[in-house]
Image 1 (tube, rainbow, N blue to C red):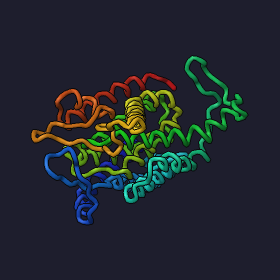
Image 2: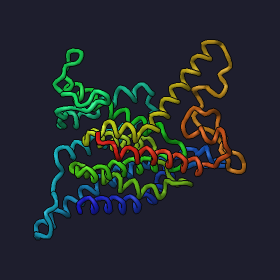
Image 3: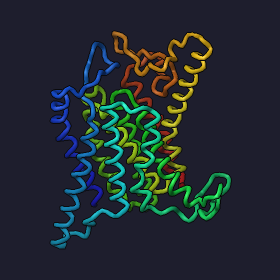
Image 4: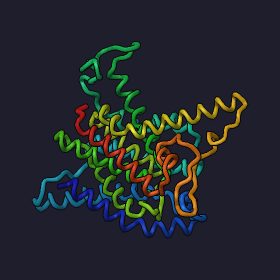
Length: 348
C-alpha cells in the first residue's frame, strides 16, 4: 500500500508541476532546439528537476502521512526510510545535481566517467555484498575468493557498485535524442525491475525507485511526442542512477545487463563511430558522416527523419527506411520491451 500511495503522490505532483515549469523555463531562456521538427522549434529543457523535486516531496509527504495514520492505528506503514533507501535517495539527488552542472557547463565525456564514480559512496558505505555471486559457466563463487590480491567482496563493494551505477547513468544519458525516448525507455526498464522485485518477493528498499517511477510517468505526459519539455542531463543522470542503484540493491547484475542490452549496444556503436572517425582522420581521408561533431540529424519537409549515419541505435531504422520520429521511438520501446521480458526470467 505504501508503494501505491508514494507512486500516486509523485505522479500527481509531477503532472501538476510540469506546466508551470514549462512556462518558467521558457521565460528564463532554458530552451534547446528540437532538431527533428520542421522549422526552428525551441523546447524548454532541464525538466528532470521536476522528477527529482516530485520524488523528494512525495517521499516526505508519504512518510508524514504514514506517521499520522499510524498514530490513529489506521495502518502500520513505515514512517522512516531504511538506511539503504536513504542512501539510495542521496545517490539519485547527487547524480541529478551533477547532471544540472553538465547542462550548464557541458562537462567533458572523460569527466562523466571519472567524477561520478564517487557519487555511489552513500550506497557503498552501507550496502553489503552477497556471500556468493553467480558467474555464468562458473556457477556460485564465494565472495571470499581472492583475485589480484583483493577479495571479491572488496572488488564488488568498492569497484563494481560505483562502476555499475556510473555506467548505467551514462548509458541512459546517451540513449536519447528523440521526443519521449529516454523517458519512455526508462519507464519500461524501471517498471520491469520493480515487477521483478514483486515476482521475487523482494520489495524492500525500493521506495525511492517507486517514487521516481511515479514522477517519471507524470512527466512523460508532457515529454512524449511531440515534446513540450525535455528532461535534460539532470533528468537522464538522476533516472540512470535510479536504475543502476536499484539493480545493485537487488543484486540483479546479470538480468540488469540483459535488460539494458539495447543501451549497451548503442554505446558500442558510439565507440565504433569514434574509432572510425579517428582512423579516417589519421589516414587523411574524408570523414564525412563520421565526423565527431555530428550529434543530431534533421527532418524533411514531410517530417521524415534524415540521419547522417547508422552508428547510433535510434538511427539504424531511419537510415534504411523512411520513418518519422514517433515511429523510431516506438521501435526503440519495442526493442527494449523484448529484453525487459527476457530479464524478468533471469534470477541473478
